[in-house]
Image (cartoon, rainbow over all chains, first blue to last red; front, side, top):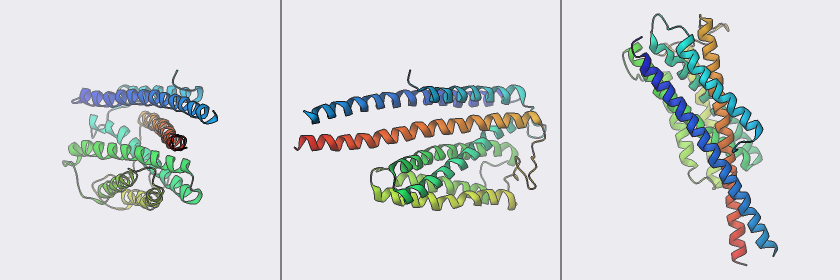
Length: 49
Length: 232
C-alpha cells in the first residue's frame, strides 16, 4: 500500500478544488446575470424618457 | 440561492457522484495485483480521456452549426466546450506520465498515441488563442473551421491505440469484438461511476461557461446601446 495516501490526497485535492471552483463559478455567473438585468432595466428606463 | 431548480439537481448529482467515485476508488475497487496502487490512476486518466473526446466532439458539432447558421449561441457552445476539452486533455497529459513512469520506466515516449494526444492539445490551444478576441466574427469562423478540422485527430488517436504496437496499452474498456478487458465487476462499477462524475462535471461547466459567454454578448449589446444614447 505504498503511496496510497499520496494518491488519495492528490485525488481529494483535485476533487475539492473542482467543488470550490464550480460553486464560485455558479455564484459569479448568477451575480453577473443579476447585474446585467439591472443594467438593461436602467438603460430601458433612460431610453424611454 | 444561486442556482435554479434543474441546475441545482444537476449540481447535487455531480457532487454525490464525485464523492461516491472517491469512495469506490479507494475503499471498494480492488488493487491491481500486477501494477499495485498506481493502477488507480486509470479511473481518472481514462475518464478524463473519454470526457475530452466528448468535449471535442461537441466543439466539432457546434462549429459545424455555427458555420451553417451563424448563430452566436453555437459559437459560445463551441468556445466553452473547447476550453473544457483543453482542461481535460491537460489532465490526460499529466496523469498519463504519472501512471507511465512506474509501469514503463519512463515519463514520456514519442509513440503515436502520446504524440497525437499532444498534437490534439496543441490544436485546441491554438483554437483558444484564435478566440482571444471573442467578438471578431472573422476569427470565430476561422476557429470554427479549426474546430472541425482538428477533430480529425480524435479518431486517429483511437485508431493508434487499437492498431499501433506502442508503449501505450491496447484499449481496456471496450476491446475488439465488443468485450471488456476489465475483469473485476467492482473495477467496472467504479469506472462507470467515475466516468459519470466526469461527464456531469463536463455538462455543468459547459452550461456555466456558455451562460457566461452569452452574458458577455449581452454586455456588448448593452455597451453599444449606451454609446448610442450618449451620442444622441
